[in-house]
Image: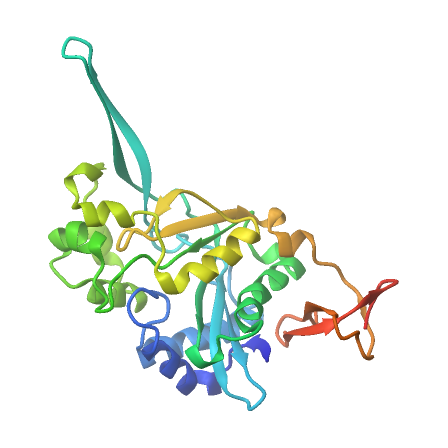
Length: 312
């Protein structure tokens, strides 16, 4: 398996991947025109022709047969061209000494606080390739790229995780909140956002704080929780130093996790080494290896041993 920048010839494979993602992966809509535009823009990004606010570093995972079986990406900065919305989960306190009543009410505040941060996004691996180190390679390859080119990214990296939905793609949070304002299915709102039609969010979103006690119990229960399929990705990012700081997606209430760029484990632990061809021990540790290039970036995972500054 090898991770490399996307190219235009990958478009048919990307469309097939997008069709298999289900609801909730907003940045990978099954729309050929939108994907073709994104691939073209990613090619410009890797060539250094995009400003940080427009940069889209889109990677694919290619197997030994040359098939594209996975995708992942880094957005240079979010919210610099159009508003970036999250709910901040806060607290409203009401009290009356006379009546001896004290209440703490979890409250959702519409926020643009994460604007300007870089984002890990669009992570998807084909089901039949979710074995061995493939998932970790596809995700962590982005962190090695960030480690090599930190000047291309913000001081903080965020990742919006897919929220809870049922086997039919219905989100309890959306059914209890979003549907009342948008008058459409969750899947349609998610798709419109993915293809770039985001103006409707600003036009229709409630601007005032929302008390979660007015939501259904099912909706309250999924705030800040991830979809079952996303749990491995969340665990991996937590092991890299990412944490939940109270921001959730406005559609499905999935958590937005974050970490200072320099504190990401794969970033601060990465190091340049001399690479030598050899035979590692049977119990050799798997390393993720980056060729330190940008436009011709190649990243692989391989067992190796470290000896005197050389990786064998």
